[in-house]
Length: 200
Image (cartoon, rainbow, N blue to C red):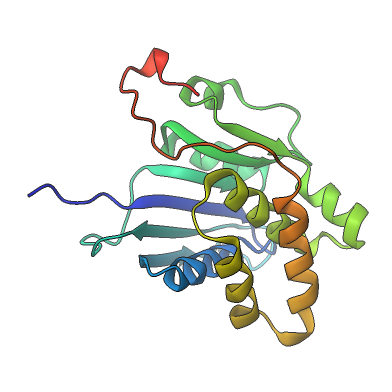
């Protein structure tokens, strides 16, 4: 019997950008959707400034192995994590980039996939909410809209369960804002096996 292969997601950023919180909320939303979920995290050496990431594996079946070596979906919040992790993206994978501090989309990513969403998420957070701290939630809204990884209702409920009560309203507004900020929608795994023809 063939083993099911979970959808692997990595959310990564510089310390203080909230990548781990975003990953935990995504994982909780998948649980609320009735999925099997494994969530792991790695903090950088520094609380602020070091690279940190959160990995989420999602499947309809029991997950046998709790780690991924390649990722179907990546949400990269900072140029440093783009450099560190882009090679782990599957061919034809989906990548969301915070374009605030990127000069351009790295060509190396474009050789792996055309499923790229680049938005100035931190700038959007400052302009809309007067603070950069909800950029991670705006990105999470974009990610869920583009991938349908989880139901939006489950995502919002996960925020209520995971965030301090005083921040729930702003985080939910940020997710909704992100959700409405993109019209892109991608299949997570293409049925097309030929790499040069498989872009969507």
